[in-house]
Image (cartoon, rainbow, N blue to C red; front, top):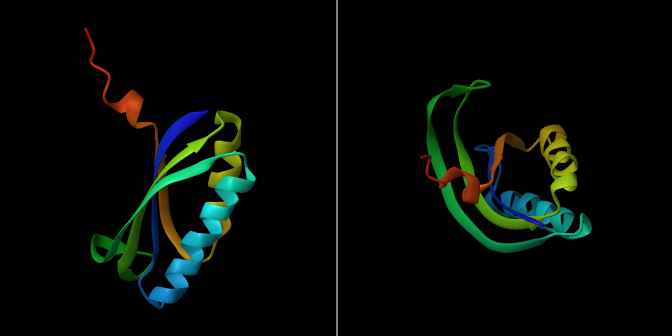
Length: 101
């Protein structure tokens, strides 16, 4: 079981309750894949630094999740095919903070 920090950016044109249902759907998916969601942090609607697919803003949500390593590909596949998701990124924060040397 690995710890991941997952950022999901949803379309800015969606209503907030729709964004919440998208996040709820992916929280359920994490559970179905044998993982758990430790924390959900809604950042709200933010303007992009540059235009993405002709959009200038989106809803940012960060989730701290526990997930078996072999299930990450399936989670990312589902995020990739979801029409409501503009971008997503999953990182392992424990690997990001290791010091070299």
